[in-house]
Length: 149
Image 1 (cartoon, rainbow, N blue to C red):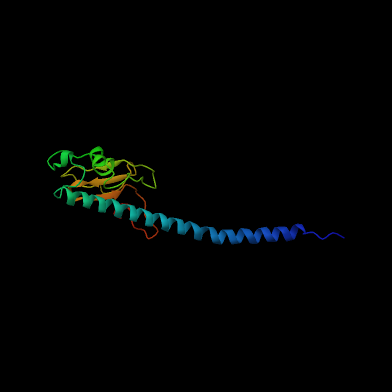
Image 2 (image 1 turned 60 degrees about the vertical axis):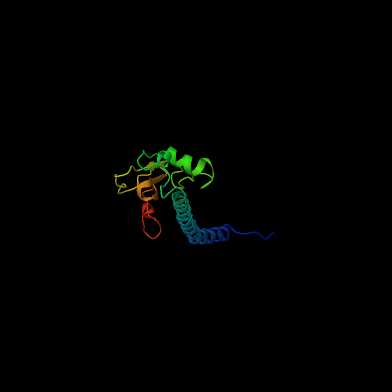
């Protein structure tokens, strides 16, 4: 007589595997979320340090001002040229991991930062006070707004 599993035994094993998966998958998802949050914080730290280094090397004028003249207009293409093009400060502008955008909304001098992120850009930058933020409206696992990182 051949030995084989019955249908009931197979269903029990599949049920146990399903229960184990239901327990383990959220743990991995939480770890992925925490890793993404840490990556965003580190990216912002690197960018802010690069902005500070640029300002120190240019008579305390942060990147974004045309011809490094704070009386001139500011723009994201000028920021890109000063920070990325020569590769001296950052090799490339990182993308926002949530919306995969690298564009920067530059806030002119005298204008206030937006109260909320919209996700329309990758980043938000205010050269007047060297404020650099991620443009994403969500909150992290500790209920802190990404915009406030």
